[in-house]
Length: 337
Image 1 (cartoon, helix red, strand yellow):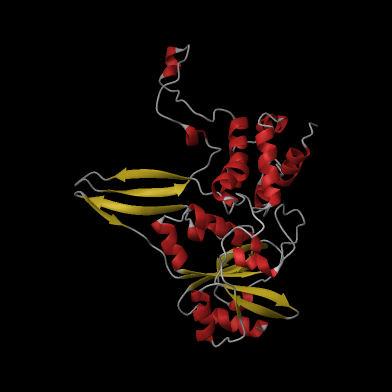
Image 2 (image 1 turned 135 degrees about the horizontal axis):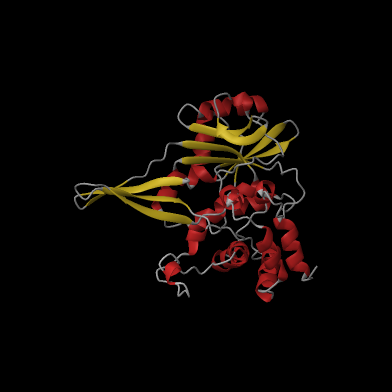
């Protein structure tokens, strides 16, 4: 497929879908609504924000209720997410496992056309990034995938939906890649297993105390991360007729209310007793360690895939310069500075 034909293909998709693609906005490369296919940037620069908000919205209404009746709400327009890197496709593959039984996620996924490419991010610091090989595609979720070949693109279809759109557009020169599951034949990623083992072997590594002293618990890392999926559930009752709604919104394990549980903390001061609630994550050290453990211990244990795809977005937005790659390298070395 030539670049000229690709522009026409995006125009074709935009007739019935909202198309989001990497574009330059105020100097930053971000996923934005596409109003002109010529504005798309297919580059090795990783967009600052990922696809996450389209499949896992920051806030959504799950259902409304009134007079004992529940009316589910699943609002999801037909979307095209164009220009996802291998890293973000890996994140989608992980989220598909986490939300396998979630009807809201599954509905959005079914109405979203995912188009990826193999132009790798420019930064060399991606921790789980392999040299691109075609067999990687067998273990990624996508509808259409483009690989650069000179000035043109080789086209792969990864789903019946991808085949349908390519054929309707008139593109005949493509190869079908059948999804073979998230784990490659040789087994779980060795790097993932090494990190998991290193973290389990050193639960009291001094790194956690050091990070606990500099982390300001702003939560930017969880918001920017394509694989953070923790959420809060809020019931918002109305004033009459037993009406109300239930909402789901992004949660953050760095916020103090994330780990609050029912009960009362015993305090020497009677004045403080009523204001204190027990938390299983009571310090900054505990919270940042919990975040790392979720990525590199619990997700690998539950799904046999990394909970981090190595995109480096968290490092880029961290106001105090916490570098996830350097921290993982230190854990693997097992040395104390």
